[in-house]
Image (cartoon, rainbow, N blue to C red; front, side, top):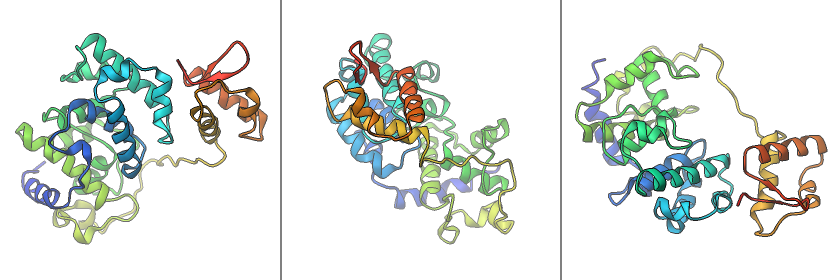
Length: 291
């Protein structure tokens, strides 16, 4: 795509409007970037900032986390949600120590080999920690490019080869500019080209947006998943985990039973936590976080 005219518009906007996030500062390191990317998965920035700061203060390098228990990682994860991310981050830290001399690796294949690191996270670490040219496709970037290039309100539910090719073609040629472009497009999606109420009037690339030119047509592609929380097993799991995080002592089954009235759903949720490695059942019938 003829993307070069877009680069200065988006980059100039970013220079003036970027949020001051700690993992973007000049003193950032690859470990801090990796932690931020894992925490930001399905969690708003305002909830991640204090959790990230506390995490890096306690575990400033992978070796520090690797030397602690996975249960402490889960406990410190707090209410960020999807606590399996904490276990994977702990496992990734162990891998960094065992295989990469305590450092976060700097190649795509090595990053992908870390537990819990998928295509997006590997590309994000390459771009934002190592300043490399990488195709970074998070929800915000996908939405911006869908509107800007394809004229669609939202992208398809899953990344397509055509979408990846569009994102690759949009990248500036040199590493440093490509890295900044990736975070700038992401920020544009987070602050301006939002899902529910896009602020097209102040968008720096409005005049070149295919979706705006088409009259902002409503999305007519495959159904987009809508996540529900209230009354789900995920809510029950969260309540069970909250009880376990609040103490360093084994928790009696009766204390877990008190968090949810439906015994069938409660037991199903507890069993799933055990299967996921987030809860350890003890021989005396009590439960703890993993050790």
